[in-house]
Image (cartoon, rainbow, N blue to C red; front, top):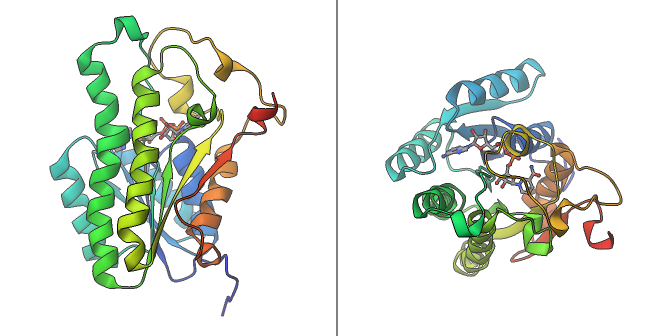
Length: 254
Ligand SMILES: NC(=O)c1ccc[n+]([C@@H]2O[C@H](COP(=O)([O-])OP(=O)(O)OC[C@H]3O[C@@H](n4cnc5c(N)ncnc54)[C@H](O)[C@@H]3O)[C@@H](O)[C@H]2O)c1
């Protein structure tokens, strides 16, 4: 029996946006720690491919299509996950979109698209999985992936994105308050710059500003974010809630 306080053996973890980038790194690390990881993503084929790759490596994984911008999709996918595997122990709200517009050119539609996934989507999944966790009565872990933009990594063209991450961070706090009676902890991770399909392929104008400075320790990799998530998702972090952890390669020292 593995008695490590960092083990997730026998536990279920749901990672949104786990088909790509940081979410894939998080899913990998949680699976390596023993969790059965369900990858939920709008990219159903990508989620299935990631889950299959984990299975080939001898790890436990499943996949499900979920569009965070559609309430019906979130509700149906969360119900399906619980029906297949029971209530998750850990939820990682990682999925996000990063398309840019300069503030004075930003359209309401573009703004709404970003909030729909990054802020409203995380709320919907948290409500659905929070209900299942509370009903199961075994406690749990929620980790929200916000951004180093909240710790000063500001770059032009990211007004909608920064606002969505601010909303997510504030939502983390109120979630921590409302779920503490169920033994569910809620924490926020602020990733620094991580080269991913999402950052490389983000649509929009060039960026400038302090967030484009290079951090002294270099570029983070998805697994660096996964390591922080693993700690917060583990039994070891049972008394850590309503906290924010930046994993930004020392950006504040740059
Ligand atoms: N990469 C970075 O430098 C960086 C820095 C700070 C924060 N973040 C945050 O980390 C998270 C992951 O970013 P990434 O860089 O790995 O991006 P990514 O684009 O590589 O991966 C995001 C995943 O989310 C999925 N997704 C997008 N819209 C969705 C929707 N409507 N429903 C369900 N899934 C959806 C995508 O299909 C993709 O698999 C995001 O929340 C992002 O804001 C990234």
